Image 1 (cartoon, rainbow over the protein chains, first blue to last red):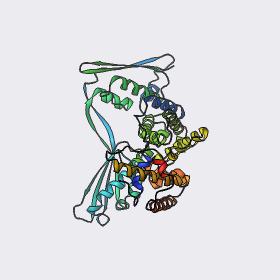
Image 2 (spheres, chains in turn cyan, green):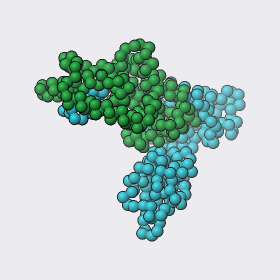
Image 3 (cartoon, rainbow over the protein chains, first blue to last red):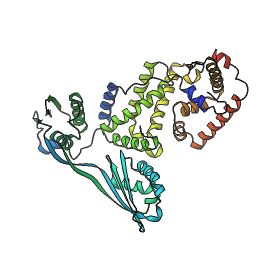
Image 4 (cartoon, one colour):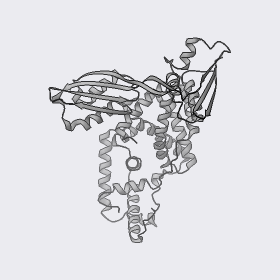
Length: 232
Length: 194
């Protein structure tokens, strides 16, 4: 019931009367936007990826072609990959109370902007406490993130902190290893059309300007990804 | 969906990555912001074809002006909604219809109790008539706050005002509305609900 004492509920109803039906973001608009984005903001050279691979090996003489076949992608394989950054800090105990942990977590999430954050505070009753922050997801600049942490969290402003990569060995598959090592992609779990589209997009994003033929064959127990690149 | 205090830095980081040519970040920005922009435009433009066209235009402008975004000056959401607002204003100026905010006479679906429905409609019609009498900039602030769910800071960024000014004007408008609603129904309210 609308109340004259508080018109805000009425205002919400008033301004939501013609609520539009909003569907999922259109894929064709996304394609056009990404194409425009590629033209406006070409990717700078990166240390790894197909562009670097082609550049390093000079496969790409005129008309030359390189074919990569990642067969039997479901074969087990182990590989190292990075998952984020761990910040290990030692802070004065006086700067911390047990009640401040939720606030600390909020401040850290806002400061770092990682996909998710794990926070562990170890208080052994001494003059200092140990704070371990695991920031999961890509953290572009750990030093800048550390500065942001100090700026946003009073309890850690004067703490001694060190950053180290969160990395580990993945007991995965050959497809996963190739996808991560070459294209930042997980080519095992998505359907063939999505895999093909993402491979093409990644190749273009990494500066590849030639033609690419990508075949994804689904077979019982394995996936075969065949990539043929031609750089004029 | 993450709350805005956490989404803001995430979106800002994606915008920074997209400025450097990261296609995945650009795709994430689009997918994350599209529903917000589509609702913002759709609330103001009745024609779905025109709204769709405007939303496309907003995102192409976003790509073109990506390097203009500066996280120190505000959130990605406020920035993109400012682009959307300008697109809506340009569209309306070109076609000269009224903004939907001015079309305040429709009836709400009832909940089955005829007397209750009638009272609700009368009160909403009264409120609609009162809102229609407010200055356009106050109406827009109310729409941004109560229709689009923007925070005071974002409304300030979008309209180029200080946060304190937005809070003060909206608070004053709400007080005035409250006082008026406790008096007799506005002139024209009966027409609005007829």
